[in-house]
View 1 (tube, rainbow, N blue to C red):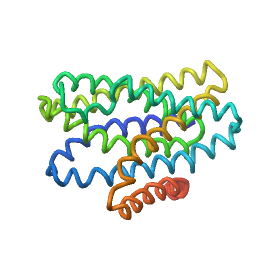
View 2 (tube, one colour; view 1 turned 180 degrees about the vertical axis):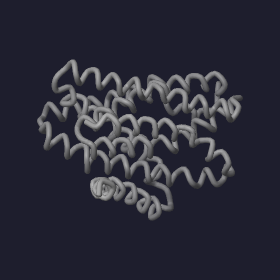
View 3 (cartoon, rainbow, N blue to C red; view 1 turned 45 degrees about the vertical axis):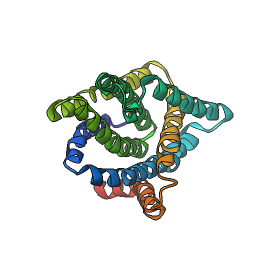
Length: 246
């Protein structure tokens, strides 16, 4: 595993956590129109990363057994439990928004630990898998951080404070990645367990959280185009890497 690429991926993802500030410059109407298509793009990149890179690496490098399938399902169930536990999407609720802003920050911290685990575990499987996971995490964070940023500002945070909170809690990604790297040296074959969990988490995010948001939208053609663009980006990763290395 190339530790430099892993570190660079985590830093890039942390910096992009402040993208919400850019979205706040848009009118509420434009943001409302743009977000669903960002979600479609996110779903495409996540599904593309899972089925083009992560499952491929899992099947070829580790092997896919019935037990592996159970671990994937465990990853999906764990994601559901985590989402409920930290009220990840409760920013859609209208009550107690002042108090909830801090719950939202705490939930994001927990989720960032998971993001670090996802990225580091994928890099253990190989550079293309790691880059695919990084892009998938970034694609998911952009619309999410934009929404979270709006909630924090609406609940009384200044814009600067909201950006600093979004970027600051990204340090928890490094904690998650450090946990994986520590386990990888202490426990042989840990990625046999971690990579299926990563796949289960991504499938849950894209299938249960993202797809339902646009599958019944009237502009399904543009949604499919954005979804396909996300898949195409993930498919092109090995070729883009070859161009960079030339």
